[in-house]
Figure 1: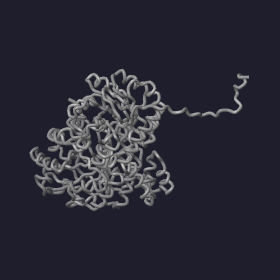
Figure 2: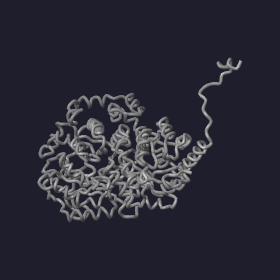
Figure 3: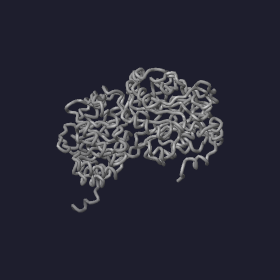
Figure 4: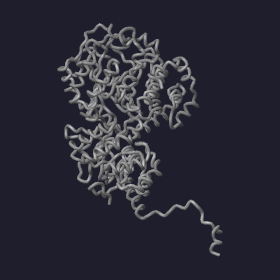
Length: 254
Length: 374
């Protein structure tokens, strides 16, 4: 079972709440996904009036909210936004997203590290969205992060695991859960991430934008379970060489 | 690196640019369609007459790309006209100085009466619009308005006269998120003809406004030309060139594009250049194929039928229930309007229409707490 900070998760599929054609459809898709950690953009929810349309559709005991700081451009703004989220949504969990570049939404490693240090000190459970940068992951561990969320490919691109070589390094040396975030375009991408040992994946666009988000959510749910089972059962190794019929080293046995 | 767009702009000739657009062939269009990262030359092909037979393919691609990036949502905003006072003469605008009609600038009390109506409609994103009357509608006025509105709107945009960098630097921390400043036309000589008097007659000052906004660190800026003044293809190419330049230089800002077609107003001129609905669809799709991330916005200038269909093809935000005169929502419904709107449906009707077409209306996509931490 997956544990992040003090919380145990039965589902390793985390989900996002953007891009759905209606709040009802989002609710049904997220229920079908079995997801227990659901991220919401602070900028999209109305923290003032207490009857926000998105939040109203996420009101289930198993759905833990993970507010995200999308829209902030530096550590200072991120820390402020996290504090707003903690106050309004009564959770100290925060998905730290600092992308000063609004075109490709590339995470800012320097500001993310700074904000993680500060937020961890303030008692937040920090889940930072980052490049698949193994050294940064180690720095974040030292800063007190509760997990790392490296990207598979550019956010919203559906391009799959373009960063797989770096994800494998991160997974092999991480002391905190590794959640592959961004770019997962199909259930097979999600299964692949789980097969290489990711602790969880976060999926939004591929579910929200499909023609049938509820069925697609279910497909992702099964793919994540299958991928995890395969990882735990240990995949056989892939042979990229032939086993020769007249071995070069057979003379050693003579 | 160039210091401002004008330096780059100077290296282009209107005539040569125009000729090269009209010289594009079906082969150029097909190459542009097949490419995964499209260049300015590809954009020229996509807006050229040669692309007309490929409109359906362009629309399909545009829809796919837009869905992937923006999802099944349309952002809604509403204009709030604060003033129709104006010292400029613009041949195409109802607020033009030589249009001898009584002028009005809303007082704080009047603004709040208007705001009450907009809040009841559900809006959280407001676009403030004025003419250019520097003696009464100036930076100090805008500062007061922002202080007044900030508690009521998550997202405040402005479409007013171009200001100095220092002015923007004062306004942004007060909650100003987005500034729209349309060049109207990139044809220097024609620009002078359409803006014979007032501060707006300074082509270069207007052209360099996005640079000043970028240096001031604005979160989003909107570009565009007024379609009908000059050849729309050439003007749109320069818009794309401008966008390309700005994105690379001010990479922390977001961008949006509009493509307003000239609308009738009291005492106005007929458009010099007509753009058909087909051509506008071609332009919208071309913009999307050229730039997957830019926001594309459509106002109530366009007809009901056109707006209903265009949301599937690349548009990401729209206004609704709009009035284009100061006090139009509550205070003085009959005051001078900037132009006649075409889609007169209520905001509620637009939301229902969006839902019927599989899109959710998004009211809020920004939070005042994301800027200027105290």
